[in-house]
Image 1 (cartoon, rainbow, N blue to C red):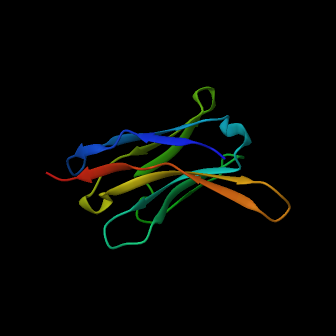
Image 2 (image 1 turned 90 degrees about the horizontal axis):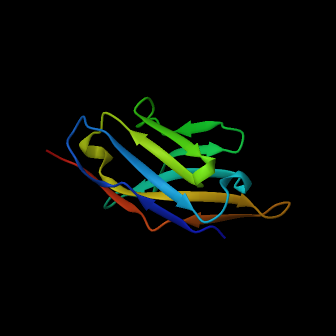
Length: 120
């Protein structure tokens, strides 16, 4: 299990920028994949961005070119830089860690979320 704590959410104007942080309770070196998901009212939780151990990243089409996921291994922290924010980006953002625990199994860990509101 990995404990995850998100921070950095808040109110930002359209076109603005924000950086989310996710602090993990253990070295992210041992985590197979980390990422960010979001959920807005009436919608399912959706993938925003992920980063695998090898550094490969994946982004939702809706955020590609605007959001960037990165890590600081010395701080056990994952970041997401959010640029050119739009009102539709408003959501609770959740940090996620996936760890392979066996030949066929894995484990997902989730933070409690941080709210991002994009509004003028």
